[in-house]
Image 1 (tube, helix red, strand yellow):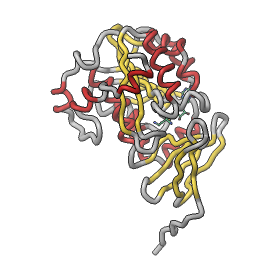
Image 2: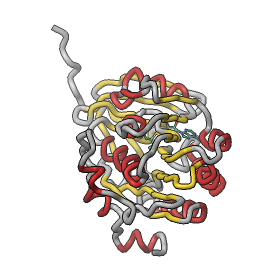
Image 3: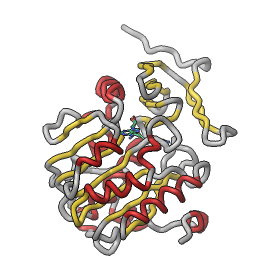
Image 4: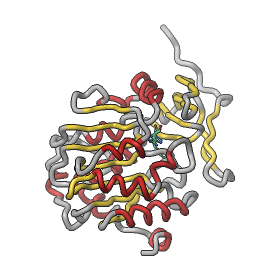
Length: 288
Ligand code: AAT
């Protein structure tokens, strides 16, 4: 019988946090994939406890054990505010986790995943369990810069979800500009909703404020929310919900979550309301 590789101490992965004075390390049980694409270095390895780990340019995008926290919070908060989302656009998110969560909503008829790097899609399909819905007939995958792709649409989507890399890494910066957020606003229908990952409030606090202010300048309603995220810097992650019409709490109907067909692991109707309650240091960051 084939034996598993022994986990020893000699293979390590390190992610340096912004500032490069702290970070996280993970043992590598087995390297599964390393590839230099035109955009970024792609690594996928197996960790003794975290399962598969996916990193771009040495920055963790997901680990198998905690990706649910991030993907559920990024996707279900906006999709449970919109009463009947049919067309959704996910920008970034090449591991497929956000697509998987979006397609749990039965009203979705069309889900476009716009991931800039085709090599991420290829690697995800081969190695990552998050890629389960990529062949779903409702899903359409395009490989384009999301900041350009969005310009083709006006008044079309019910929801836009920005699952991007950090603003300082790879091509992620395009997805944090005022112009991009304005184009998202234009691409949404008159009752469209939006969410974006907006970094951690400790190592990247400057970016939380920048992203929130820029999104607020493009949308009449915008609210920052947080979620626990074990393997991302600081363990606490921020997201911004924005919309043209719906308020994330006043227009939220908890019975839709209670009657949802899928068992979720992080998000529930109480989390939905609680995640918008912010600690003082984060309120201060965004001048609230
Ligand atoms: N859900 C996994 C988490 C991610 S992946 C972000 C993806 O965005 C990457 O696959 C990257 O190739 C893609 N991307 C980056 N820039 C663009 C762009 N301009 N257009 C389209 N796709 C893009 C994000 C984790 C963030 C947190 C890490 N600290």
